[in-house]
Amino acid sequence: MRMHWKKSCLCCLCCLTLLLGGCAGQDRAQENPQSAVTLSALQYELENIAVDFSHMWYYEQIENQTGVHVDFDDVKDSEWNSSVSLAFAKGSMPDLILRGSLDIEEYGVSRHLLVPLDTYMEQGLLPNYTERLNASGLKKQLTASDGHIYQLGFLISQGVNTNGHFFINQNWLDALGLPMPETVEQLTETLRRFRDGDPNGNGQADEIPLEFTFDDNNTGIYNLFSFFGLPLNEEYVYIDDQEQVRFAPEEDSFLKAAAWLHQLYTEGLLDIDFISQGSNIWAAKVNAGNVGVFSYWRLQNTALSPDVAAAYQILLPVHAEGTAACLPRNMDIIEFGAALTTDNRDIPASLRWLDAQFETENMLISQNGALGDTLIQREDGRYEVAYVPPDNELYQSVPVICGQFFAPAEYYSQVYVPAAHRQEKAAYCRLYEQGGVLENTSFKYLTAVAPRTTTENARITRLKAKLKSVVDAALVTLVTQGVTAENTAQLRQALSDAGSLEYRTIYQQVYDRWRGEK
Image (cartoon, rainbow, N blue to C red; front, side):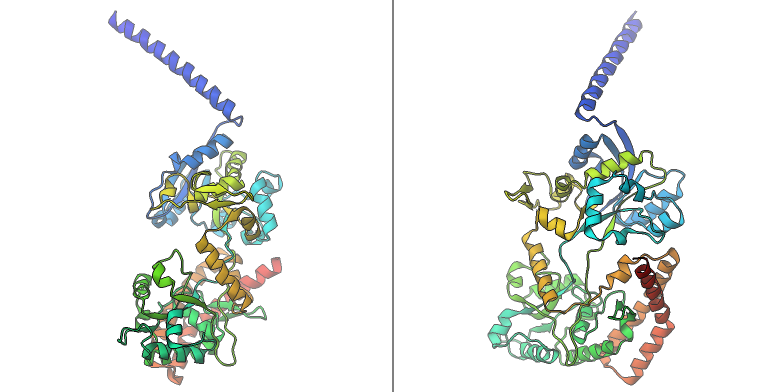
């Protein structure tokens, strides 16, 4: 009797559950006329930030708008490449690959594991994204070597045309009555005065005239080569005015710049720790307030303390006699945003879900937080940030840089007011552009725009590793021991043995092919 009563109660409970579930389903269907779809996604996640994409407020809003639910497989940065390889090696791939990076030539062109999106874009299934892409003039960047587009791009255009800008201690210039230097000779003399003139006024010879790190274009000495007309970058290749690819360490200006750095080293004007110190030590030294000149991304909202940053003024790159300064030029480079695998179960629903994130307000919320909270809309219709939560709290509600975003420069300026530190950087970039101190054709066309085949990419990677080892060793020798006929010959032979000609030739072939297909 008791067992029969329990079964009766259980049956009633099941009926009630089904009834309530049906009502809930009807309510959701009324809220969202789109049919419910569930998709799977491999989602990139930053290494040091815990993010719960599956229960994130932002994606709940996108689901309500589109009727598409996504089950996220979150993968940390350190595990991303291996997880991508494993996802494509398994019998069943996720519907979507989101953010991080993806070898489009390998998985799209060679292995045909990605869905070409060209036709769907032409059919109007990505209206927000497609309109913006076509207007940007950047479509070529996303076109693979076979002429198809396999990815949606990620772009936050901020008018940045170079990495590190030069800054000089204005307080020290004022204390010593010195003008802003314009040539290498004038800068060298200024550095000597910084060393000898006690500009910090403490009676000690503790000033560091020139503070740099090693091998990059932000805080590194690579930027100093621009004073001799050489746009040295971390890939070592650049494009001259005749559309020819040049290999920077083989140029005469490389040796001239190295000889000047040796002079600075022997006179105690360049902190010799540049050879080994990282950005943390570099920042600590600058923050100590005893540095004359350095290069950096900007002053505000960086590793520099505000009181120290206030002492510095932007410095146009100086130039050696008979040369024009020439820094590597940045450009808007589209990162990987999203791709659909050929196992995708519902392509229209996937594109609907993605394109909803490119709607202007949705997109800005994804970066900056909820409207009316951290993001506000001004009377002129543009959006701006009202508040930035501390300790990466934004990632608990919106994906920030792990989400979808495509904002070319002209469009972005029409809809968004950048934060003060971003306006600072943009002002420096305008000054450098007006000063004519940037290379005419960005090296990024070689390293990030012109598509390379899988074979070319693998070969460039191997050659780069060998060449970097040679260049690093040579720079230490040239700066500390000076430039001689003997070590010059040794450098050029070592570069040749490491494959500098093949390295440059591959880049030339890639660039020529891309120019022919434009």
